[in-house]
Length: 209
Length: 165
Image (cartoon, rainbow over all chains, first blue to last red; front, side, top):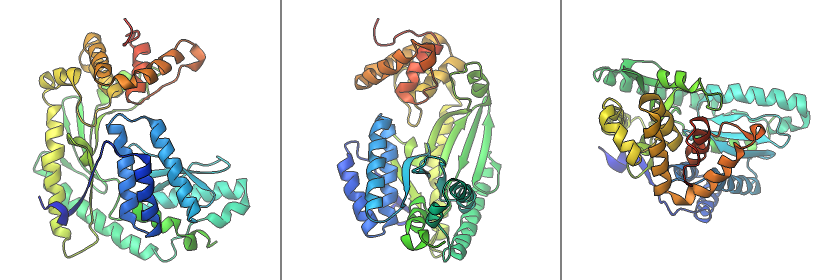
């Protein structure tokens, strides 16, 4: 194991509370530090592992929304949750007509964003100004995506030796035993959710139409 | 990086109960959640100079965290008593109950649910609140999360009230 050089560990504190997370969010947003925001999301998700209720997480997400709005991020949109594997943020507009998913996987972002745009144009064209565009990030994202897929392939091939089938893309490998399927997959490419989150939330990107 | 245990058999089992969400998932999640002290883990592949090293660490982490987790499901005779008495990381209470109903029996499932509330009595009020929803047909819906999911289980599997006997 390489420890901190190769990986980032975010220790989970059972006593972590909303106040503590709010401070972290504030710091993360003000410094545009994607790692800090990512850590907050991870911590919030881990509350479930400790038996915390959805209500507590909802309150924390509301708090996150407020702080981001205050700093000019995600105008007109609210964070309403994240998926079970906490690599996607689920956001909605005020009209509640659409519930797009912000995902660190670019194709999904584009797909869901198209839906969002269509809805917005149908429901209220004025909200089109909130349409995010990956003007400068596109090329960089594509490079990262290919690195991600290449790395997944290396990992997949390694586990062929452990009896797993080699699969492509994000589904790294799978093995069937009796009535069970064991799956290892990677949901987000090298660009972390938090990094993408920061990119998407930059007002300069949001306001280009 | 996630490691998930699923079962087509469990999905078929869940299909018998309209109040259960039709899904094959049993247990697992992000690698960091599979450990006794859950934590979040991430790897940065952006730096080409250390990428090979990072990939090697991902592989090692899968070997030390995911594969032993999967192995537990290959030994059901050891796993069953453990999840009846105690918790297994990244295995939510309602999923434990569905699993035991599908692969063991009602008695084991009910005992596991009772033991869950013995360990976490602070979750009882919310369980009872949701259990009351099942008194009226119009308020019955698939609560599919942990202790709240146990309210659904109590109703559909006929456990009765798990905390008042």
